[in-house]
Amino acid sequence: MLSLLFNTWKILEPKQRFRSVFFFVLVTISIILELLGIGMVFPIIGLILNEDFLETLPFLQNSFLKDINHFDLINFSLFALFFIFLIKNLFMIFFYWWQNSFTTRTSVSLAKKLYTKYLYQDYLFHVNHHSATLIRNITTEVFFFQQLLLRVILLFSEFLILISISILLLSIDLNSTLIAFIFFAFFLGLFSYFAKNIQKRWSLERQKYAEKSGKDLLEGLGSIKEIKIYKKEEVFINQFSNHNYLQANIFKKHGVLTESPRLFIEVCSVGVLVLILFTLSRGSYVEEQLLSTVGILGASAFRMLPSLNRIINSIQYIRLYSSSIPVLLKELSYQTYESKNDVKESSYNTKFDFDIVIKDLEFYYSNKNKLILKKLNLTISKGQCIGIIGESGSGKSTLIDIMLALFQPTNGDIKFNNKSIYHSTNDWRNNIGYVPQQSILIDDSIKKNIAFGVPDHEINEKKIINCVRETQLDEFTKSLAKGLDTFVGEKGIRLSGGQRQRIAIARALYNDPKILIFDEATSSLDKYTESKIMESIYKFKKNRTLIIVSHRIASLNNCDIIYEIKNGNIKTVNYDNI
Image (tube, rainbow, N blue to C red):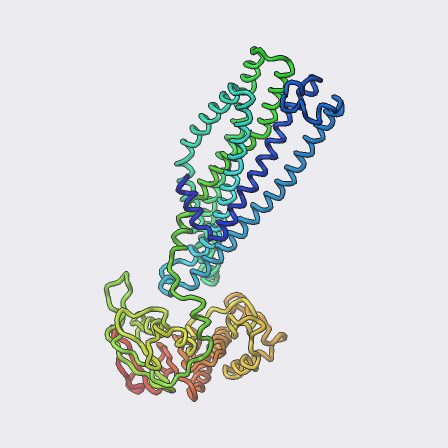
């Protein structure tokens, strides 16, 4: 438990740790109010039963209270008791507000921190991690950490209150308090011992099934066409339902385990109270002393039993959510490969005056021993249009990913303006427009898809219009009722394949890049649509360098030079001889 609390503390940011200190101030105030409320029960019962009760309390004999008549003193005491409980409960509303505000802010900050880390990781990180896992970490694991944090705060506050009331009771009736303490300590220890391993196993299983359910949803909703065509709805439904049921079943079992101690505590509390009353009734107590003692024990039990139950519940929930801690610690430990400051440094296009030089380039994936690219040497002149062909798996897209600085080569380098692109990545990328085979369109307007990631107030309308015209989207957008403000649907589902790719090309043109890279950008289109889009692409040759990857030779007929990648090597080929 101590290591878990220490790791929870490590996840918090310095300002959150500082704010958590305020928690102890609030708990101290709540303890004082709790003790005042419970402590007043003893003298009030004594006053009601005995007019001379104040004389048994030496520290009150010289106070102003001795001048108040007995009836008024009882009324004053009862009003004071009510007022203390009113103040205490109003304060507890504030305490719960602070508690939930603190944990909510922490979870929002943590989710943002994780999302930021993921987006600034290198491309290889995303190749090696399933998006469902990352989504689970940002949503489910952060939410469970928030719940764990709530339970930790609740555990500490209730534990401190329980200890404080116990000290008060020890000073009033040592024997009865020790009987209750020994009994409940034994029960808590026994229950905790048997529940610990079960809850640890449930915690890991909960995490596993949450990830599988997330994958089922992503894969099912992302493959809706294939599911409909092959009539596989039931397969995906059953798979998701099974994993979701297994996860829900863990929460069901945990719920039963969580509620069981409360019922047992209630029964045992009555037994302990009967035992204490039996002991007191056989002692040398006078009537008012006996009733006063029973009264304060009853008031204490009224407050302590819910605290005891909350402590047990908190421990169980902390164990259930504990598997989130190592996950979050691991994810937060990842080094960020790019910083936001680096991106902001180069918000303009560096002048592109020299050739792109690829020298002795080699690459292989860490999980494979085979070289994908072998000693590639290539020079791309400014304003040149080159085509790249090759069989599937030959390394065409890998070369493009390296040129985009998404992967670093195993050996060799790529230079522009006589500088390595890996030493001036942002300057390099500011000169690039990129169109992949499957461009992801966001569920927003055509305009916002073209000005991808640009805040609304910063969108350059003139640039949008120019991009639409260059990609021959103007007639299409004019035919729409909302024009450029028309929503495209999730992944552009409301548009045709050709329209989606033209929007993707317009997006690539928005920042006026000097280099345009097309990675199988038209391979998923029919020949007629492809030929029309290629006509548009070749018009960009006037003032830009074009790099076109395609498996359709016909689409490269206007390239200045064509390269073929085969067995990790690159060579020039003649269009007429292909």
